[in-house]
Length: 336
Image (cartoon, rainbow, N blue to C red; front, side, top):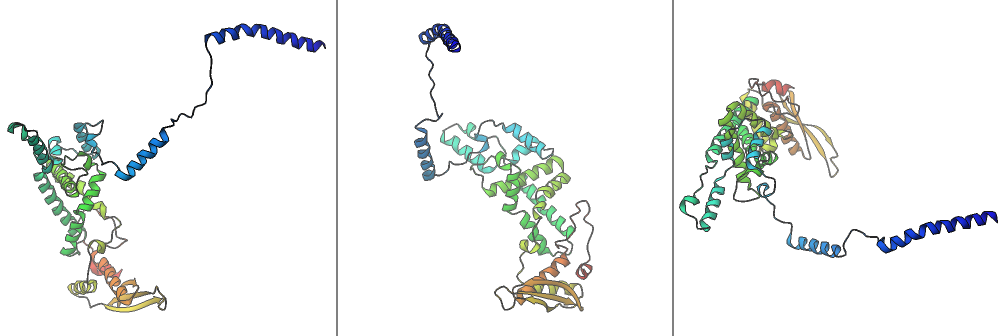
């Protein structure tokens, strides 16, 4: 009973102390606690509507980097040379990115605005001369490089390798990875492949005039010749009659004509048979190739022999860019 009286006394004391604070709080302000999801009720229907509109109209057209914020063209031009560790003449490098279609487009837009003749003509020079110099230097250098690296490769093979490296798909792949597309001044965006290819050769021409042939050749080695990695010779240079070409190559080297022999076979009575045909010259096995038929295996064996002659095997040594004087002997290559 004594404890109960003590508890009641403490409760009365507490209420007497707290009541004045309650009165002041109720008079000054009222605190409300509400739960919110931080999402508006109209947001769901709006997002569904925008998603439906995107499906009907398609994605928005791409924007050039120069039309987006935080863009300084002069700084980007300087950063391009520093990123590649090359010393470009800035005026030549800017000229390399100016295409004739851009100048024609800008002048046409000024004519539509009915400006005076003096204001219509742009004081800009296009990259046609740089493109011609860079393209000619690239073709000459690549042909010399392939002829020195693969001395036994015929002229048609050298031309096939050169044309493969300088085709638009390879050149545009290198140009996009070097961010050339962001710096091009062109009438259209996305930039057409012809314009992108032409611009990269113009950059080679600008580097040729700025730093000389040595730096331009290193540029081609680093960004174009490296596209050969993982590619087979006859994917680049398709042959219709590999056996006929092998006969010509053996005649040039005073070797006997190849004789084909079936060396191995498996699954001949199944849907996926495999045959191995070996080619012999002077009673020595020079090549062996597989195939689903005997004829296809014979052609593959001829391609294997040609790879050995030309020095383009899978286990060949990496290129020595500093010295192109090594010329492997075809007879030794065939004996291996």
